[in-house]
Image 1 (spheres, rainbow, N blue to C red):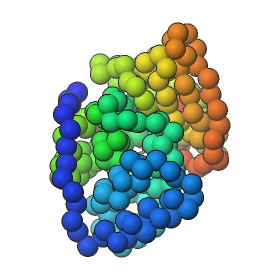
Image 2: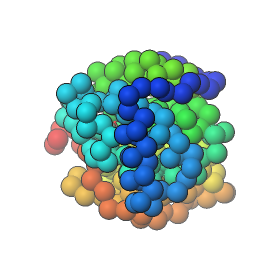
Image 3: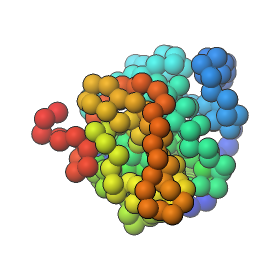
Length: 230
Ligand code: SAH
């Protein structure tokens, strides 16, 4: 799985378009405004990223188990995270915590290139297969500890972390371009604040702002929570 490039994908025609439209309406009611984000939610077939037994619930605004003790995040939180990154379609984006690959696919529609890191090999493989099946050619997935970022492909214009971190991992800040934006849930294992981090234009430091209360599974690794205690 490589440092990819290029863009992608055709429109999806399946039996779920009406459900996706209703999900888009629900997200608009909750305050999501970015049209490109709403278009991505209207396009990406979330049911393909869920286990077969849960596909009929795929367009509920809810998190679901995806195996290996992990969850696909709530669409509202994912849409807000994407919105907070203010993507224009030209960015290189790093995602930590590929999980199902659903947010990876949303990002692939919103940015130029997506690099995604997942610590559980089976999830990384499955996400790679479904992202490829959906026709995305601008995504690369790496099986590794994402708290270290993905240095070989850095720097990134934007970073999104999909697991709860005790603090903002330094390697991630260092792999962000000056002025770059990162969205990361920061707090305890039980509850966190979805936090917007903006690296200073000088590259010397960063500002942070708490946006929403959220509950994510823990980010486990060198600059996250300890994997031993989980
Ligand atoms: N955005 C994903 C969220 C999956 S849950 C989705 O909607 O499907 C969070 C994911 O982060 C899990 O798959 C978990 O294995 C992964 N994760 C936890 N710690 C990690 C780390 N240090 N590096 C990479 N991935 C990690």
